[in-house]
Length: 137
Image (cartoon, rainbow, N blue to C red):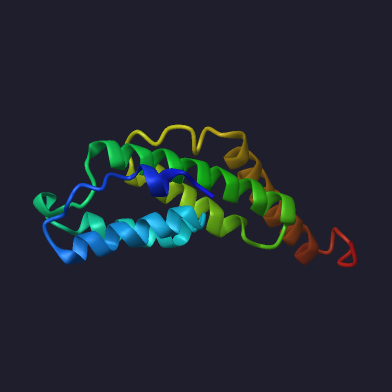
């Protein structure tokens, strides 16, 4: 579980919608739900700046937590080989592109391993199609 839940500012927001989104974001981060957190951030980014329920410090904490979640998800996808590497890579790219200072995602060992895993799987599938590799491997 994350300590971000307790660290996010309790500063009042200008409306109940912003407060509700902040609470949902806290919950998603505490539950290590990267997909849910990214979805909520999409909603928050559509809000006018004056109604944003997170201050600069909160956004920094969220950014650091999302980087950690993205790296963890990449590592898990590579270890478990359950077909989730593509999704983990997409979400890692979203994290890095959404936050300009979310350094460490695409340069991480987890990201590199996921890319290599993805490329190896593509190459293996191509070789299988060409009949160069026994399908029973």
